[in-house]
Image (cartoon, rainbow, N blue to C red; front, side):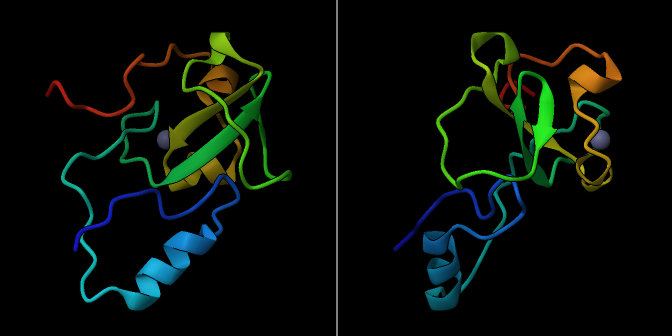
Length: 105
Ligand SMILES: [Zn+2]
């Protein structure tokens, strides 16, 4: 059986279902499609933004968007360094690629 999903939330904590899947899995493979941070580094963290500012508190599941302009709550993939510094694309004043996963490459 194969399962696919996001391992951790915007606080870098495992989703309960992901935690259990890891506990039960025979093997874990990272997908070959690797999201990128706005800086070009491999994105390893999910950031939740509220009106463009990264937040690290709140309920685990909030429906948002990957397009900042579409909603007050949005999500953005960041590298470890920029997640730790809470430096989103908006803070760095760069334009986000509308497609965070490099499917077209
Ligand atoms: Zn980065």
